[in-house]
Length: 388
Image (cartoon, rainbow, N blue to C red; front, side, top):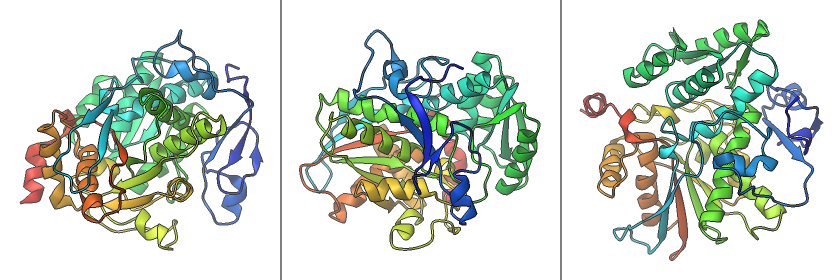
């Protein structure tokens, strides 16, 4: 077993039950029996926070990841760039964490090296994921680099840009009629014992692989290092199921527990329509939410997760939505600042402006926007047809 020797167990992020080290495709078994859905995480036995300067990328932080070694394609060490935003109504220092500069052009590249490593450790023949785009491309690339088979299950509406990228790796692309049909297919593949699922298999999701989500903690580690120990006041994150949001939250928790930082930044979940904001007002996180996300399919979907709610509540953060008719303007505005981002990442700009108008941010605050994906994945002709 190549598992990090500092990991002693796993635990439920909701009920805190200690769990054996395993793959919990259905989340915490105790919570599931109570009609709740919660993801699980890891307990590390370490009294110091060690950054290995002899390593590069995410491997610098391997003491705080499930594995000491894993496939490397150049992920991590993404720049943190200050961006001038004089047009904002509130004076802020704004930084862009450029996750769009990862190998496949998205933040997913921090999750999939660990997922592929887990699959190989278990002796699996391949990996599988339900994806509309970024996760499918990233997992297919990392699987190919590690010599694993890969199946990506999507719906027939998948954008041709992502479709071509997935197929170019030699991965198999399975197209279903509905998003829920994807889960039926993945459940059957898992039963073979030869395929490892990177993504959730519940209709009301717990979240993606706990092993993979740990990779997102390194974004928090890098932000604090790049800001020379200063703590941002707010971190804006595009959110669908909250894997990235929760991973970033847990990374800041690690740093606080190790006394590297004194406080956790307020996390801000950016969505295409009301989901988490409704949950924070008291709606059941297990219900389905209806709204338009056609221009931002990477953060679409009708469900949220307990992990996303927990990250916002425990960081004293909030959720904010940006309507679809405002999305293309956000793409163009960020491009004019030198950053061509996917619609689901450019949404951060519109959300930041809206937060300033609503006076949701303290003047003079330091704000980090986690730009999740580059704009070469945008099908502008398609988006413009939807707008009209």
